[in-house]
Structures are given as structure tokens and as C-alpha cells.
Amino acid sequence: MTTVLADDGVTLSYRVQGDGPMTLLFMHGWAGSGVYFDEVIGDIDLNALQVITMDFRGHGDSEKAVGPYDLHRISDDVWAVADAARAAKPILVGFSMSGKFAQYVAVCQPDRVSGLVLVAGFPASPMSFPQEVVRDWVSRAGDRERMRELVAPFISEPVDVAVLDRFLDEAVKVPATVLESTLQTCISTSFAERVESLDMPTLIVGGRRDAFFNQEAVAQLARSLPCARGICLECNHEISMERPRELAHLIEAFVSGLGVGCRTLATQS
Image (cartoon, rainbow, N blue to C red; front, side, top):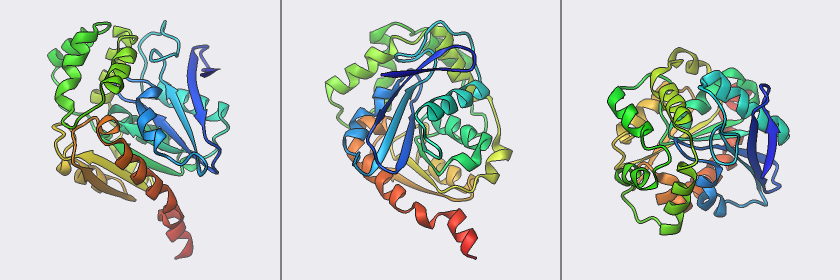
């Protein structure tokens, strides 16, 4: 793993693979890390694409001794990694809570984002999420079996035991304060009025059996973004674990079609 210092001195860990002309920057979900996407990346042609995975502060191999943080901090950290990896105009791939975070990163620097892939990703508006559920989720910090119990309802397709164990290995590393910061940031913040300006091509991928982000949620999010299209796979929320090959192929197809995105059409008209 490679590291970079954020502007406040916190060490962020990231990994670069492939040497293609276009760059995918993967942003993980709650309690995750960059390795969450390993199965997806394994089915991506790394001769045609460069892939960056990062660990948010407090996650994976990034520095753990961090206090609460917000959308601004997450965005600055993403750009710190992108700059260190010399990714001038990456395609942001955000999973779950990072579907929302990726939209915010794009809002902050739209001219630096070539496209968005939002995988089971939450919208820019707040969501209904009882605080007792927040407390329950955060209380599972460091407890492997309680984390396993939590993720089980979000998986409906067979997942290799080693893949799930790797996710749990990473999940138990995340401090409770960090779990709470990211969860509260996801559910309580809103910048819905700002995403209307995002004109980069956007792919939204959901799971038909996802209680959080079902087919209607995919369609609703697609309607909120000017240049988005949505698709649903036969799975639950953990798409990267349940349908890694299908997701990889969707991403590759999306990248191959970026030349006919909204900005190109606007220039030609």
C-alpha cells in the first residue's frame, strides 16, 4: 500500500493498479476499506484502465487516531489521494454511503470528474434512519460476530466465505467514533439542490432485493441527476460481493461509452 498525508497531517492509505489511460477511483462503504472491491477489480481489464482504491481515514490501513469528520473532510481526502496518484480526471465509483460521498466530491470539483458510478448509492438528500439503529450499528465496533450478524440481511446471493471474512477483518479495525461519523454524515446531510448541476455521465447500479436501494430508489436517484441511467441486478445491497463480475462488466461498458456523455453532446449541439 502507498500512503499520502492529508492537509491536516492524517495518513491515508491507497493502492494503484493497472496502467490504462482512464482512471477509476473506488470509494468504499460503511466499515469497509479499499480491499472490498478486490473481486470486482479482478474482472476489470487493467491493461485498459487504471484503478485506485483508498481507505478512508479511520479505515483499513489509514490512520486510526482521528476525530469526527464530515463531507468536506471526505472530499478533501479523496482529492489528496487522487493528486498523489496523479489522477487528473478520475471516474468516481462510490458504494453505498460513498454513492452519496462521490456526488459531493463531484459537486466540489465537477471539472475534475469524468464520470460517476453509484453502486447501491444513497442520494444527496437526508434519509430516515432512527438514532437507536445508529447506536446499535456503532456499538458493534470491534465485534466480529456482531458485524457478521449486521451484514447478513444485506446479502441474498452466495458469497465466498473468504470474501466475507476479508470484509469482517477490515470492519473490526474501524473505531466507533469513525463508524458514527461516516454514518451520521451519510444520513443527516443534504446537498440535493447542488447535484442538479452535475453534467458528467452517471451510472447507477442497484440490487432488486435491496431493502435500502431497490429498483424504485435507483429510478428516483437517476431522475435527480441530469445525465444518469440506472440498472438493477438480481442481488441485494452488497453488489460488489454478490455480483462482482457483472458489476465489473457494467463499469467497463460505462467507461467505453463516456465519449458520448452529456458534455460531448452539449459541445456538438
